[in-house]
Image (tube, rainbow, N blue to C red; front, side):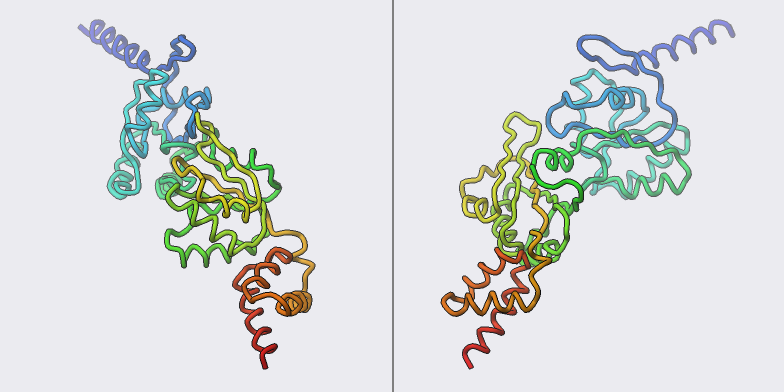
Length: 312
């Protein structure tokens, strides 16, 4: 009886291991069970062929895959014939889902965390889970791979030695313009996410807040209708009405021009005074923004003061 039970257990274990597999180019690849811990797995941002081999091995080998939307992750699992146990983990259920995942980790489970697309935690859920997993002493491993931030930087044809990732801008225009004024002072290439419904308004606000800068609009990266437009922000803002708004957008904005550091307050005043002799305040500000690269709010306030002095 003992021998029979042993064979039964061994058969069940072999059957369980056989489930841990993925199919690549028509070949079934069996993988070992992943070691206990939390795995942060980057997934494709559009083209499912961008998944890494290590990611496939891990997704097939873990006990649980925690994902934003099980329907979206299921498509990836189906593509590579991975029989994964999916559980939802997103902003709306994280408070209740997180303790359950941590409990599984305490029992020796292996858990993969994925977002709908790209690298987990980058404008996606997961920070609190990772923080608490680390605090509890569980192993946490990152599996690098697709990222819309890095993909956009690669094709933008703008400086990449220093960049600042902002994520999504505020939805309301007042808050968005204030934030853009702050971002305009950062001496680095800026990377923003934006929705199709707001991208046209955001381009206008970027032009107002930052003046003449080079910008790349990256839409639907790695997908069938990928589109990258590179031009000055004024040119893109002027043609914003014709921009296709369906899809996901990453905006890459060049750093402030070098002349912004060379133009002193006195030089700015002289530039504004010269413009105000024959231009309106609005036109004088626009000209000074293009030359200096300084924020519109700062230049506009100074132009109003100089205009008042001129009127006295």
